[in-house]
Length: 134
Image 1 (tube, rainbow, N blue to C red):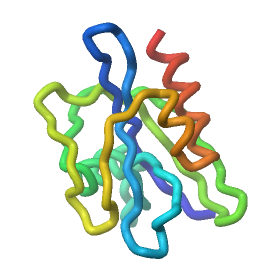
Image 2 (tube, rainbow, N blue to C red; image 1 turned 90 degrees about the vertical axis):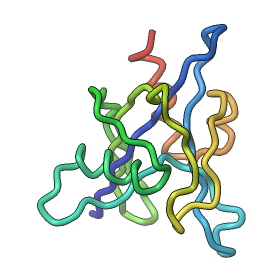
Image 3 (cartoon, one colour; image 1 turned 180 degrees about the vertical axis):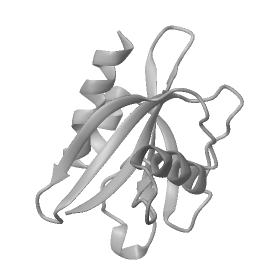
Image 4 (tube, rainbow, N blue to C red; image 1 turned 60 degrees about the vertical axis):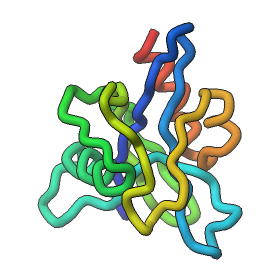
C-alpha cells in the first residue's frame, strides 16, 4: 500500500471560526478532481511527519516548525493508498500560495466548505480536527 503524508493547516478568525488550507491538483485531467490536503509520498527513509512538513513547504510555501497533532490516517480503497495527516496552526506570518506545478489552487476555506470539496476519504480529518481543537 502506498503511503502519503500531509498537514491540515488551520486558522481561527477573530470571531473564532476555523478555516483550513486545502489544495486542488493541477492538470486538465484533474479539472473536476476533489481538493485535498497538501501531501505527498515520503522519500526513501524519510519519516512520515517529516514528509508532511516537506510536502507542505513544497506545495504551498508554508514552513511549519512547531508541534503537530496526529489526525491518524485514512485509506483510499480504489488507489490502495494510506494518507496520514497532522494538524497544525497556520503560522501567522505565512502566505499560502501555489508553490508547485502539482497544484493549481491553495485556499483557506470554512469547515463546511472543506467538507463539500475535499476528497471523500479526507473529510474525516475535518471531524478529527474539531476533536483536537475544542
